[in-house]
Image 1: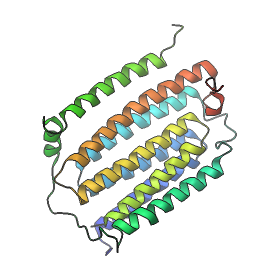
Image 2: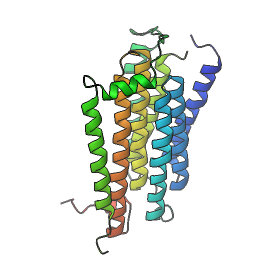
Image 3: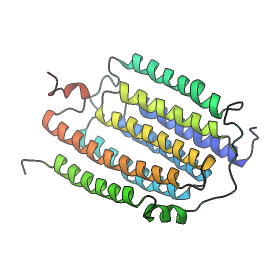
Image 4: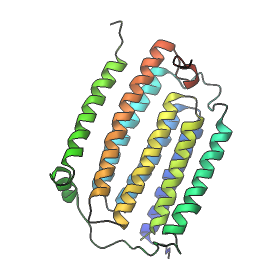
Length: 175
Length: 102
């Protein structure tokens, strides 16, 4: 079922990147280091997209998430100088949160993922088809009037509104 | 090829770690990072299901692209709000921002 080849080794490496980076994000005291861990985790996800033969998604992941959002977060950390004066990084309900998150993970894994898509699950044995759609198909689907052109335009509108809103909210009123 | 449930398991792990970060951190920027982790886990799930279940239907990739858009908008507006709050209250601790609490 799980033979050790180049693909599975790459999967293990990217899984370690994703999970280790995520753990670093929630446990590191220094927020700049947390952002670097976030970049590691996002890079692991980009590797997953390459493994799943979605190269456009991998490129967008690197450009938008690592290139824009992570840098934006670094700017916010610097502007708020928030990394120096925090004595407690967790609030009073952190133990409850940890239990809830752990239970959620166990529930997802034992209750949904393994019974349905696991080795003996009801949907098991679903193999990757040899047909690979390309970025051209995605581009055509996004502007096809029978598929996703309306959500695409609404997404553009949302981005414009978010940009204007961010400028208005972050502007200093005294100037 | 790696079976589908391994991708789902890793995505579930990243999602739950992000949820823990959102629920337990005090710094607003750290909470926003947890939200980014959760959105990213959703994206891994969408692409994995697209590849294994419906590789000819572009819905999986299109939905993932929209999640990217939402994540970018959410990060921009969220960080603007954090900077605005920091300017007026000199704090990014979410417990200090309780003006709407009656």
